[in-house]
Image 1 (tube, rainbow, N blue to C red):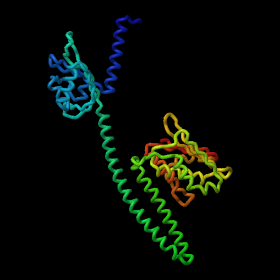
Image 2: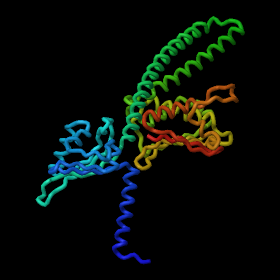
Image 3: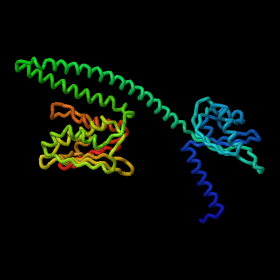
Image 4: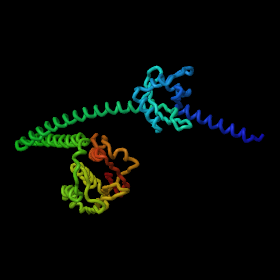
Length: 365
């Protein structure tokens, strides 16, 4: 059976009304209109449900104004439309039961034939859930920030006090160094000295973690050539013994704004790991360079060492873990610290590697 044009028109209107009603219901969007000349206020069913207004309740403009949290808000919105302007605003309203409700409200002036503003009409959507959720997130964020600040303060105290005790232990052992006589005492002294050195190293790492988040203001301009050479000089003997080759290319950029101690600590980790995990089949080659990719500055440190099995060990590279093969010793601390320090300054550290061939660490500034 063929529909005539009139039936098709009615069908189209019904379809549009259906979808409009569904959108309103899903998004909790109501409509309203105000007749300023006759003191009339209209609000649809969804709007009434949002503001807790019963279906048989008729509101005057004065009564409707009480739905707003403040009278100044009503005056401001009315004046906006009386000037012929359109408004849209997120604001807190109150339901008929005086409960606070957040809505996104819009309004446009209505004109008569003489272009006089005679009313206002618009829509409002309930955003109460999203505002409440955001407020809750902000509240938890403030709590977490306060807790982190207290923990950081506590960590500073602990780190300072432990370093003081560690220094006293080192000094005491140094005084006893010349009075060690029998073999048993020498072994005992050697053991204590090793413990003292390990404690000092651990406290140094702890201090780096503690101070990482507070170093943003300490960034200065770093000459990459000087910084890299400084670290290489510390490893010169080890590099010469294995006849290592170092290739440097800072043509992309040769300076960065960074914390010098953080950058040197990271380089120290890279060089030490490259020497330690070099391949026995070939000379160690270190390639250190800078690149720019889509206006992003990259610092790359590449070696041709034994590589990393990323499928097996990727989750361990930048975290601290216990190694059962070395009697539960802590592993991965240096790279954990490096990534922690880089991220504290808004950067990132990633690794690319092929087992048995090469490893590349990339600092993204």
